[in-house]
Length: 258
Image (cartoon, rainbow, N blue to C red):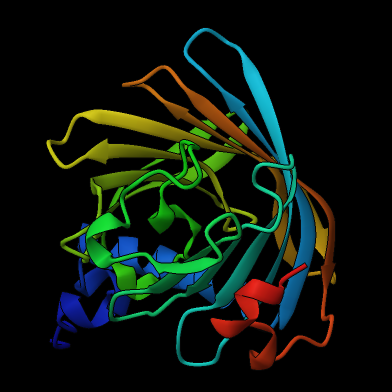
């Protein structure tokens, strides 16, 4: 009588190993990161629309540039152009994957460069509903992850992944990310504060593809559920590979940023 081949040998190797929710979540985050490597540098103009709890709005205009950094987080600079009371204000970020980010804010009225301490990263950026930490590049190592489920959002297939900041000074306990299965870009992020209460929701709208590969949302809409305030960022004139270098992102250059 022929010996029976053990059933385990007939099974696919993938069936022998049950991937955990944490491993699946990390896998999705790493794939999103892999698809967004190689863009080099980027610049754009931005409108910031501030809306209070009564629906009254005010608007600011700024321009931005960012630089991709190998083996670390990206560098970025935001310079305010309008209105007059914030014109010349400049914000510089050196994101780091495994340690606290370096951030500086230049205030022209005081002619002073202020370093943003790690304890203040959860504070509001220029009176908006975006925190300083929201303006850093979202490096994979900044979080641990947990896959929750597959879902649909506005007709798009998405993964829902929870991520937990590794920085003890983060203003968030956890975030729910709705990641597009095709673009591997987020459509929505729901933020929970340190007490695990619903805090803010960020929506990404009007995606466009650049260089036949890189997806960017032209609108980012942040709503603070606790205060009733919101801030919209509208990105205009996005351009890649402008020839920026490290010398375009220096602390001393903040005072000369235009």
